[in-house]
Amino acid sequence: MIHRKILFLIFFLNFFLSSCALINQDIKHNVVKKTKISEEKKIAKFLEEKDPKNLKAELNFSEKNTKEIKLIKMKINNNEKVENISKSIKNFYLNFAFGYSNLENYDVYNTSTNKAIWDDRYTELGYTNEIGLGYDFGKIRTEISYAQENGRFDEYLTYFDKSITKIGDDRGKLHKDFYIINTYYDFRSRKKISPFIGLGIGFVNSVQDSAPFIPEYVRQAFVLQLKGGLSYEFYNKNVIYVEGFIRNAKSHTTNDGLGTPYIYEAKDGFDSSGIQMGFRRIL
Image 1 (cartoon, one colour):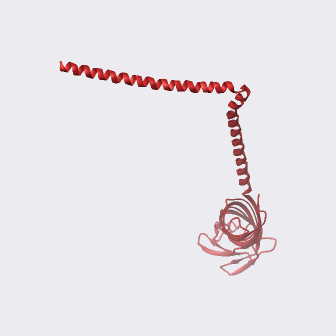
Image 2: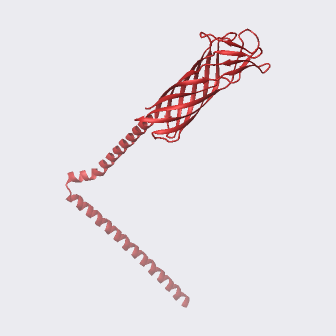
Image 3: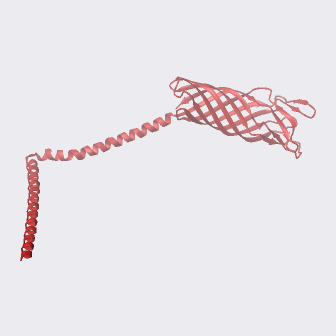
């Protein structure tokens, strides 16, 4: 009997608690529903009081604003792109230089005996000119350049009898074309006065007229170039500069022009050094 009363009491308590929970949930749901209805009524009343034209304008304001903002952003982006392209173009430059070059004498060896046969001599200074297109990154510049050197092969020494053969003015002309990629470092970028150094690599095409017992020949060789100088910006990114250079070319081979099977190597190649003055124009 006692057990039945306990069970009945437990059942009654559970039923009571469940009912309370459902009632609370119902109350909360009704409160939320009433709040929502109240808000909807307020919005409806607000819309009724508004002039339809003004209401439409207000509702479209955000959309128009968004479109205008997008257009402004597009214009800004386009302007930035144009400015960046303009700045990039302004970093390009052209330069032109001219000066004197000292054409190095070099011994010519018989490759079969590895002995010097004669010594080609350039007793007169040559002249050089150079033109280049480059891009200025700041302190570092890169440049593609074309340079010429012209001179004369004046005489040569024959080693086995110590005789010197002179070459007439109408023979022995020398012409060299250099195609070089250079990289420069400006120690004081964007300053009026700045020292700089440069290193380049490329190749040279050399053409030499005939001389007694030496035929005319055309030869190509790789070349390294080292430069150092001082630049001065005098007006609106116009720059004048003076520089010294060393051009060190790989050796080349030739024959004696007499039909013999011997091959001869000029071990100092087409080396030269000199000084030139130039003008650089920022585009």
